[in-house]
Image (cartoon, rainbow, N blue to C red; front, side, top):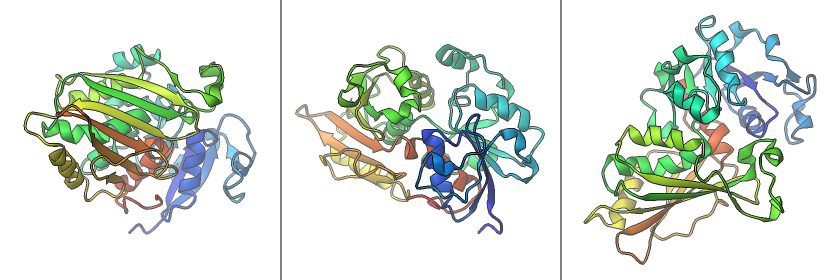
Length: 343
């Protein structure tokens, strides 16, 4: 049990993810929010952006106002390229300070791949190896060795949670995996209307980034830690809802590996995890039961082809795919209850 509260700063507090961070951290039993920072709307109450938030929270201010000697952790919900610059300035000067980055800045261990996929030259290359890419369920034993925690992308989170344990235990075929993911438009951030100029945006479903979605590099990297022979195709879609991701993953089981064995294995693998629910075989699944929670719900379903199965994985892209997992990582980092402050 912590004797004192964790003194916290949120950078990018007024974005979709930032607001969910504020909402969750303001109710966290071990956290004290000291500063809410943004580049615009300086001096406004956070309540202006979300009426459900308390007016007693700190007003929006600039990061320059923060006394970092009194801060334990900085959450960075910033556009790609900005977190690396800020962490580079603070990392060596304030050796007690911890960072949880929700952008892509420290997800890729190869800075040339980062430049290729994000069109940004990495300005903190020496810090990349001082960071850990952390899906919380996979890093519990090692996360405490790092001060920079790289929060995974939302699509990769929904995909890796069901697949990585199956890869490691060689229960499924590594070849020709098809991943079809559908996300609410909040995943594109506050400027989603500028990014996606689709007709009838709020009443249609759209496939996008067919050949080159940025998250593919992240998925490749993490699958590659298990085997370089894993091959997959991935395509994301936007659906006319604000939040939630449903990933549909089509694959083959290994010879003589039944769907029951796959379901039993995943159930046993995650039995001590607060946020992973493995449904009974062939259970229909949507995002409805995971919205506004840090849960990942998984259903394993048969198809009419004997060894072909579909795994459905549902998360809230803003919570388990971003703010919730960031707080879960913080809880692990500070050795407090993993589910503290989370549903």
